[in-house]
Amino acid sequence: MDTKRSALATLHAQADACRRCAIATTRDKIVCGVGDPESTLMIVGEGPGENEDRKGEPFVGRAGELLTKMLAAIGLSREDVFITNTIKCRASTEENGRVFNRAPMLEEIANCREFLDREIAIVKPRVILAVGAPAAKSFLGAGFGITRQRGIWYAGPAGTDLIVTFHPAYILRLTGGQIDAVKRLVWNDLQAVRRKLDELKQADEVESVDREGRPFQPRPLQEPELKLF
Image 1 (cartoon, rainbow, N blue to C red):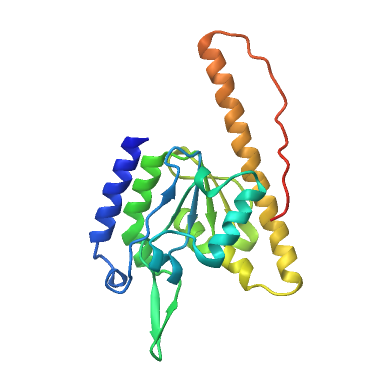
Image 2: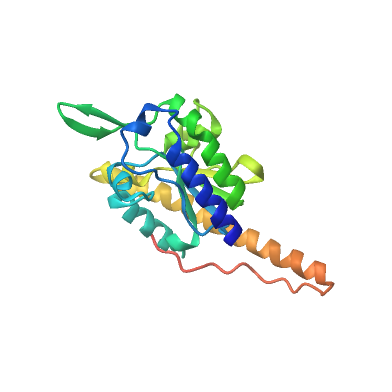
C-alpha cells in the first residue's frame, strides 16, 4: 500500500504542476483521487465543483454527502473505495462577476486522461462505477446515453468491469415524483455493484483454496442487509 500511496502522491504533484488547460490557472486546488488504494471499487465522477476546489478532495458538499449515503446503503464507507474524477481541476465559467461550475470540455477531459489512466493503473480496481454522463462518455464514447445505457455492465479499462449510474448532483436537482423514480434506478445500479463485488470476493476465495490444494466448501453468497439510500 505504501508503494501505491507514494505513486499517487507523485501523480498528485504532477497534476498540480500541469498547465495543459486554461482551467489550471483559475482553479484553487488540484483534486485527485482519495480513499483506499487497495480497493476493488473505483468511483469516477465528472470533475470537481466549488466545494471540491476549495477543499482539494472529490465529492464533498451535498453531492458528496449523498454519495456517502449511497455507499452506506450497500454496506460500504468512503474509506472502503477509491473516489476520483475524469478531470482534476474545476471547470468553471464567469458571468456577471460570479463563477459557476460547468461541464468539462472534451479537450479538457482528453488533456487530463493521463492522470485518470495512471490512477487506474496504480489502484488496479476490478470494478469501476462511473457516475454521470461525462464520466461515462470518457470511457464509452460521446454517443453514450445515460438514460438508456446506465445499469449495464461494460468492459472497462485494464480488464475492469464498468457500470454507469446517475450523478448524485443530478439526483439533488430533481423535484417531485422524479426523485423517487431516479433513486430507484440508482438503487438497482448500486445493488448490481454490491453483487459484483461479492461475486469477485467469492471467486478469489475459490482460487485461494485451489492454490493451497484444499477442497473448496461452496457456500451461497450472503445477501447483505441493503436499504434504499
